[in-house]
Image (cartoon, rainbow, N blue to C red; front, side, top):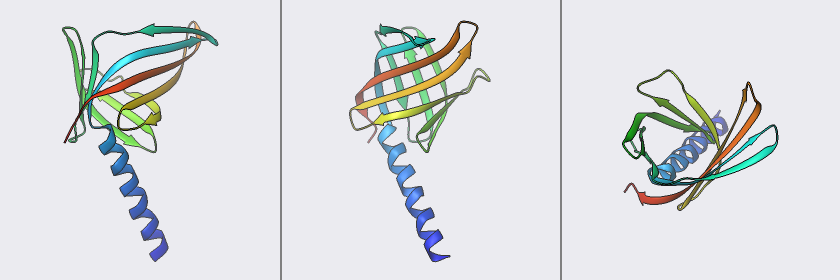
Amino acid sequence: MLIAFAVLIYVSCAESEESATLCGEWKLVSIRTEVNDVPDEQCTESVFYTFEADSTFLIQEGDYEETGCWTLVDSILTMSPNDTDLVSNVKVIRLSEDSLIHESYSDSEFGKIHETMSFVRMKSEK
């Protein structure tokens, strides 16, 4: 039982460190979308994601803003916007002090969609 408790403490601390690394302001630099394995890369301008330590987020693109709550568990970033029931679940494939990359998979009327979004850190929350 002591070993199970130690493992639980380790996993909890690892998730906390990962979440702490995510906190701050990120600039979206590219979106790579593949529909039925056909790639399309887009550059973006002035799209910012801010993840706060209180598990809230803000997405800004020009005059558009979206707020909500986020969680990061086992490399799955879940974002629940305040104004809609559309919850976003993405897999974080890279998270460092200066880089965030996440990907998602979905089905649409056009076929299977694989999207990868790349961010660079603008500001840390400290």
